[in-house]
Length: 324
Image (cartoon, rainbow, N blue to C red; front, side, top):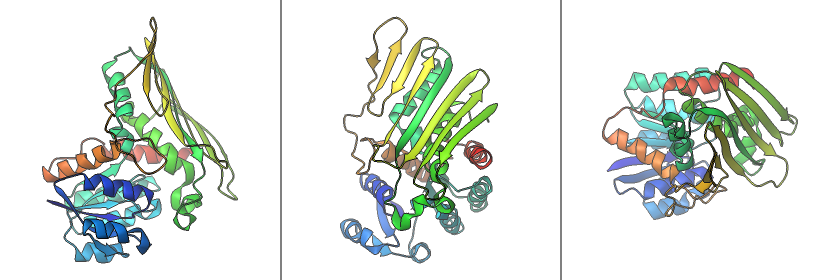
């Protein structure tokens, strides 16, 4: 049995815990959150030890995998502390809030000979995997251009309002846009774009509105990405519209539809009939289970985490550091 501990059991932390509970070969040995009430029920249900101090948990428990689902600004600190104690670590995105911090985290993994993975979930999201496959295999011809979007209301409900604090969350570039930017870089082979143009409208006094519109040019291919926290009740929505030589491929947040040049559009089967509810404002999906299952399998088999490269992740942070 793999012994897993989770630090940070808010909305996304609960999603991760529920994914591990579906794995027959995983035992959740400990949960940690600074708000003790968040973990009382889960500890009772899973038999996990309860902590409010991650260092005490790491020092006292036998842990194979530490899953870090805390506010972004302490991902680096916790990850390095655990890896220096020879524990494999996966952390929610972002890996850190600047490129150098990300390099420090990877260096800690190499120095200690442990596995490390950033949970960039779009790489495991079936609708985005279908797009990557279509690009790689030229299913509909060459990619011409694309538009990604990820927009919704400002998250004013976070613990200690940390998400609305630029120094702790990085706001929209690090919390929302990084999802699509990471996937764009992955889709385009991890190489830096030839040209980058960013327009951003934000209210830095109150941090209740942050709207990013970015264009990335790779040779003759143009990719636009929009991300926003609106100071309104606008519902969260995310997806893409991708223009190939012979078809349009669209994900509207619910279904992926292909519109060929010479016949009616048709919906792709993503195999989501048994997808799990996330319990947060996201569609039902097995993507979170898929990413954590991937990491657990590679820890058990002592295989390299080859689904994402260090250069891809640090290039994403380099772009955000220098253009936002």
